[in-house]
Each structure stands twice: as structure tokens, then as C-alpha cells.
Length: 238
Image 1 (cartoon, one colour):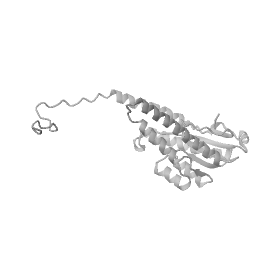
Image 2: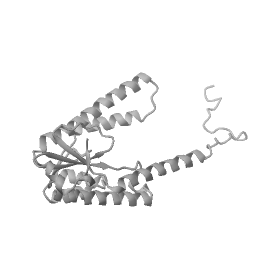
Image 3: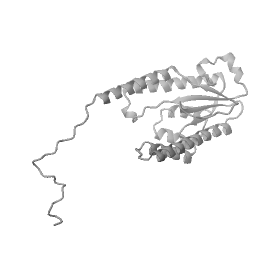
Image 4: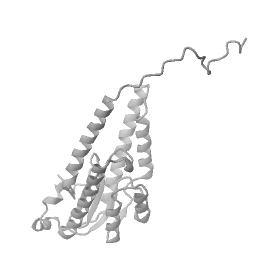
């Protein structure tokens, strides 16, 4: 079971000596463009990443310097990976950049091929499908691609995180990564995480109420006095 970072004390830090340690910080996301996030939500998200930074810094003194950073949706490591995080507007970019400027290495956590396959299948499943058979096969294909994606992340961590090293994984809360048994997983849970969850739920419910309260658009009544300009001329084919 993952232990929360806030519960680690200096005397207990000795229990991690010689072991592989992995901090897990959840990625938070609002399903709208960054400039469409309400100010209150943007403030909470900024506060969340500030608190993650504080807790991650605390671990440097408690159980060892972070040597590796693994970030979901990042198939490139090093400077290329940092450039991708910055270009895609990831709020975690500053945290990762600061760690790599110290001693940490940004690892290529994902397979580009598997990640692209998963994203394409996700887009397909968002489209209305007439065939239940096709929908079922797409769901099975997507589940298999997702499993392979998370297996790749686990294998990357296993192959790069050495004994007595500490890593940081930034990934969504619904991930399905199965970590090696000898890795001590430490869950980073700053107070703003619960605050963000509550805000997101309330904001989503508010949007749903607003949409439900909107009147259904009424189609314009046809103008019986004017002919339809798109209608074919009855004499055209005479």
C-alpha cells in the first residue's frame, strides 16, 4: 500500500535506506482549454502544484535526492521531454525543470507507438457507433492498448530506478500501473488535492444544471410564402 508523504517523519526515513523509492504525484486536469478554466479553479490548480513542489522538496531531506522523473504522455526524455511539457502547457513543467536542473533525469516514460494507438482508439470511442459489435471490439482493443501502455511505464521505472534511488512519477489518478514489489511507493497528497476534487465536482454539477435549464432550440418554421431556393426546378428535367 502506498504511504502518504505527509506521514513520513525523519526517524521513519531510515526504513527506506537501500530501497527503491517512488513518489507518486497525481496529475490534475480540467477538460477545457487552459484559458477557459474559471479563475477559482486556476487558483486551486496553481496552489496544488506549489504544494506538490514543497512536499517533493521535503523528500529530498527525508529519504534521498530524486534521481529520476517519469511523466505520463512523455515519450521523450531529457531536453526534448522538457520542451514537450512546456509546449503542451503542462502545469508540472516548472517542477520537472527544477528537478532536472538539480540531479534528476527526465526519463522517456511512454512508448510513442502505444500512446498514439491509445489516443486514436479513445477518439474512435468518442464517436457515435451504429454497430454494438464494432463498439465492443474497440473497447477491447482500447483496454489492451491501455494495459500495454501502463506495462511500458512500469518496465521503464523498473529498468531505470536503482537500489537506494528515489524517483517521481507524475500520472493520472486512474492509472493502472502495477509497480514492482520491491519499490516503496509514496503517495504525494497535498491539501489542495482534495480542494481541487471538490471544486471540480461542484463546477461540473453547475455546468450540468445550466445545460439542463436551457430551453431546447426550436427549429425555424418554414416560410410558406417563399419558395425554397434549394429545391429543384420541376421543369429542369422535363
